[in-house]
Length: 102
Image (cartoon, rainbow, N blue to C red):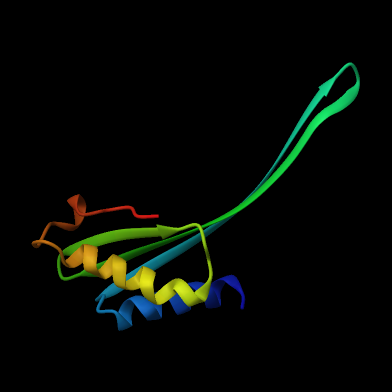
């Protein structure tokens, strides 16, 4: 499944969970660290990461949930968590209603 299909699936899950609207972002990155001493490599490290973010809107409220896993099997739970945050406890303006959960 390509990135756009993953994000479309996540947004569909958010709508099914009760969001009036939603948007999603997937960020991937790779880093490489090399330490040398006296002309020889002493330490070599490579790291890769993916972060997934979902913003949902319910009425005049919004919430943001995030995950470091882009596994579609967890999309329903992520969407339900974001919608629950947007609904609780009381109506808040969109500007002041963002939450982050990992």
